[in-house]
Amino acid sequence: MGLATSRPHLEVLKWPEAGPVPLPCYCDRCATVIESGAVLHGTGVYCTVECSLEGPRTPA
Image (cartoon, rainbow, N blue to C red; front, side):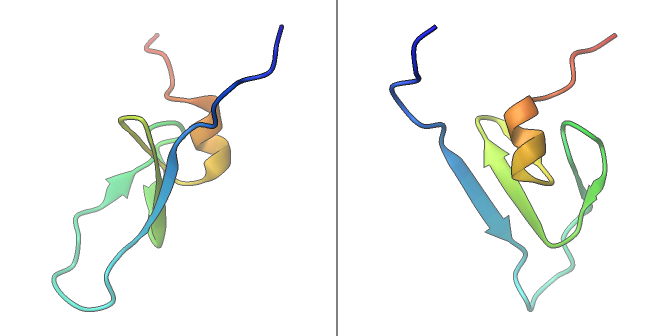
């Protein structure tokens, strides 16, 4: 197998310090509550970069 020619696009978001309390956000991989920042990878929202690299869980 060859090496990837492009890097995946990841974006880390932080909740605003002031303003309304955001609704709880859950990791698409491990389902934990995301409290301080989220990693967006494609259409998924993850708690850490490690979860984002594993991708969403497949339905049983």
